[in-house]
Amino acid sequence: MKAQIAANNKGIAGLEALVQKYGRQTVSSYMDHVRANAALAIRNSLLDLEDGQATGTMDDGSKIEVSIRIKKGNRTAVIDFSGTSAQTKNNLNTPLAVTRAAVLYVFRTLTRANIPLNDGCMEPLELIIPNDSMLNPAEPAAVVAGNVETSQIIVDTLYRALNILAASQGTMNNFTFGDNEKQYYETICGGSGAGRSFAGTDAIQTHMTNSRLTDPEILESRFSVLLEEFSIRKNSGGTGKFKGGDGTVRRLRFLKPMSASILSNRRKIKPPGLNGGNDGECGANQIVRASGKIEELGSTATIQVECGDVIEIKTPGGGGYGRN
Image (cartoon, rainbow, N blue to C red; front, top):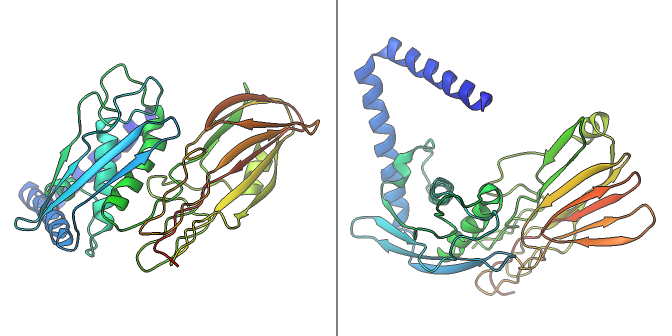
């Protein structure tokens, strides 16, 4: 919260400096221009798109339904999430703001114009999101995984509905560990989906992740862990005319007892291919005890690790595009 307050104060200072330099009217006019220009860019991109619908399924069985209707006459679109699962008792519910941000992200990536991120992008887009659904839940629904996990499935489903891109890994693979003294949080890259004219990318942070991994040297110097493997998971991307990107394999050995948690998705449901392309491989989580015993972990799990235990996380590959 302190960081958020500091960021807002920085923004206030920057805006006040702009007004002082150029005047309130000029700054206000340019703000209107930035929004109008973004809306125009989105409207122009809609002319290249067609109607479509798709379903995204979470590992817990929840479904995200979306249909997209392009109105080329007035260059607007209706994005309708009717049919999406009701809000859940787990924490996969997504606040309305996050659902809206996922839609904005997708349509902004489809513009050819180099526009700054702003709410003008949403002006040509009408959203229909049912109340009390997992994409628009009511209090006191838990929402912690909605931002990091469900948002990824929203994005994948939108791209598939637009027939643009096969599903990417569809998860951030949130991995945390620590004890009373130190705690650590990372997201782990995987495969991106293939598109109409290109293959997916191996071992990359996709879509809503917006984060990078800590360098191994820093990780091992600050925490009692050993990074034994971080490699590309060969052949985990879906095949097709254009192949999906491969996921990764990440193995961490613990050098002291700690608590560890994994929050992930697509451990049961494969990242779908598109237009005849094959699905990417599911991810997998497991712990290899110091004794050699292997314990499979689900999409979400919290466990106690002892000295010598290894946690292995295999991230999903991206879906393929088109038939070979």
